[in-house]
Length: 116
Image (cartoon, rainbow, N blue to C red; front, top):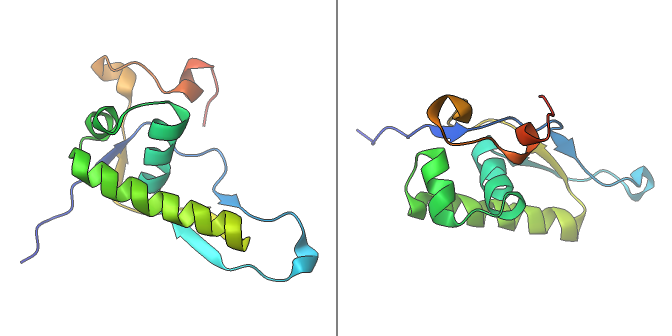
């Protein structure tokens, strides 16, 4: 029996979940699905400036798990930029987690007063 997957703690869902090229005359682009956990690692490491260790603590997973998720997310993002594909953020093993209830502070989006 396989080991059950561990839920990733996510502070907030993205405001927009679909991104793609702005020139529709170029033809139909391939749809790439990015899991919410992959989005969260990009948000925490690249946008918030956390280390992989801090990201792992925030998400409640091992640092090696964060490294694997982050590498998968970066590979998808590079393919989106190079090939002009569409990305849709959805799915994955996650739970929304209110960091303020546990003394962790807030994500940058919440610190600036934006809501989901």
